[in-house]
Image (cartoon, rainbow, N blue to C red):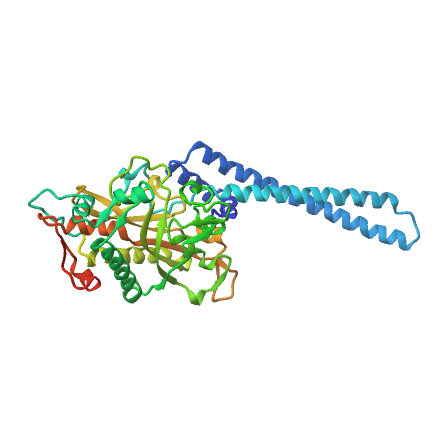
Length: 435
């Protein structure tokens, strides 16, 4: 959530610097006219609210002064009827003003929930993924002596992926993994969790896979992306779209100590997404499923450290790809391709020979205090100053199904067998291939 006080604060020369920067950020995000109108409405309502509070306080002061006169008149045995009538009128007026001010504040808070985060100054301006900036490329793309197959061709031929029966059992965009594919999915989860907990210092967590609407509001999925989430009918329960939601809300409404920061968690969970708006995209294979496994990295940190932590978190996700010897690149997303709540995002894209393209396998974002304001997560400074909002960061470390895809396609052989990466073999009974 954007800080309304920051939007209204004037600089020393009287300019609304932050507001102007935020307005430009909205435009750089391809903000619609409607979004810009919402911003103007927020500012207008906030001014009206302050004016009503000011008038209310003035009227309340009059009321208190007249009430004192009533007391004095009664002590003197004089008639105070007319003044009492005026006091009653002021009481009614103050109540009405306070109610209107509260109503205006609620409108402001609700409108703020649909305004996106302000992009960090280091984020390039751009309209689409075509304007993203490739910041590094790691690993050599393997040259095959044959035309490489896509993962679903390999999986179906090896009889370890079954889309048809999943379609019969549930519907489109669901899959049965079996045999070596199921074993590799489980192995990848353990491999990633082990790496992040033992090498990178994250605390392991398995969160609830169902959350309430307050949690989805806290991370920014609600109200804007409500249609993307599966709802359990007649309840306030929703299937999680990512472990980011429950883990971020672990400290919802709490105040931490600065000495306890940073706090970092790696969490395994299945993820459930309706994929609203993605009709016709990646309909074959495991790329875009309604249900998939993911290991999530999540950090709560001091505001002064968040961009440094962002680099570290992204590197931790990259280390998984490097250990599996999968070619990848890091992309700094432009303003027009960045997520709603993010101030800065790196995408990691793994090379898929079957598609002859790089595809996203992790998105690592710094939300700064955007989520912390929504979820009311603060920390007490060491010096005893006023509590501040923490900064939250998260990223996939990695999307498990997409990692399986990348292994299948990069480690395939001409005869249809698949070599198992050396780093993963201890998790798969020391087998070296799938055949």
